[in-house]
Length: 298
Image (cartoon, rainbow, N blue to C red; front, side, top):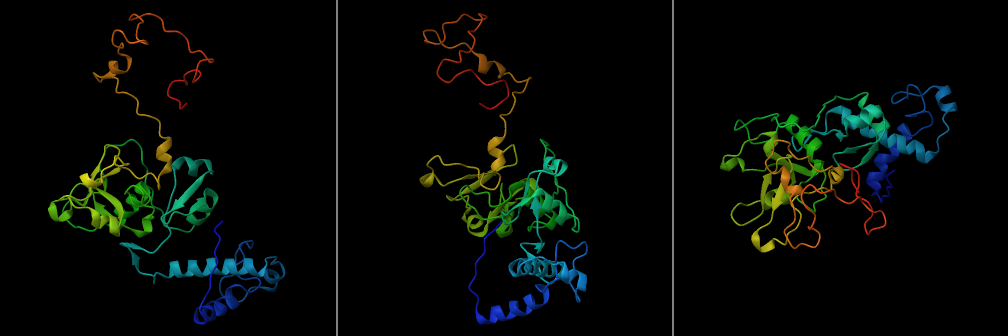
């Protein structure tokens, strides 16, 4: 739930006073009705069976008014996309009917509400697995990210990618990560990232902030040398699930696989065991306890 309080000017309240008189009347916009009345006059049965309080009716009137405004198509565009509700979630949450979705503004929505809202919406599906192929490439044909690219960026980044920034996706622009468009950068989704206006303008390869894309398609921000204190390069604020990501499994064909099992140097107090000798079992009584099972977090 989201708590809201307001102090309105007389003009603003006069507007909502008239809207509430219509949409917050008994029997109007009742979510408990199989077919809620949102226009015309509710039936006497709808009025009689309306058990909501005045505050609940006003809440439902606000929701109905917002939906009408969104569906009108008269709200224009926001950063290249028609003004609309964009929610990102995972395929696992959709299939299990559990979990949550997150809007482009950062609001957490229960998955049941996401599914209900999606019942009368246009659907775009963005599935992210450990894929390496590029998607939605425009190269040099245009500078501004397309609506389809913005949807992909919202799904992938969730908000401004600069570490420490909490601006949600609705307030962000498409930032050319590897190279600015004026300097030969491509408008490809794998070379773009979300950045709020001030952070987008802070990028300057001539002594300012710089950005680059890592192998996981995460935008890394590097400060100018005089501001570099070893701070984080990636913003996990909008994608906290990244913090629970298991470590990458080693490549079985890599020549560096033996690095993790190399024998310690001679004279090391913990490295006196001979190669191939059986290692002592974990002792639960020792500090730290037994080691965690393979591929699981401690």
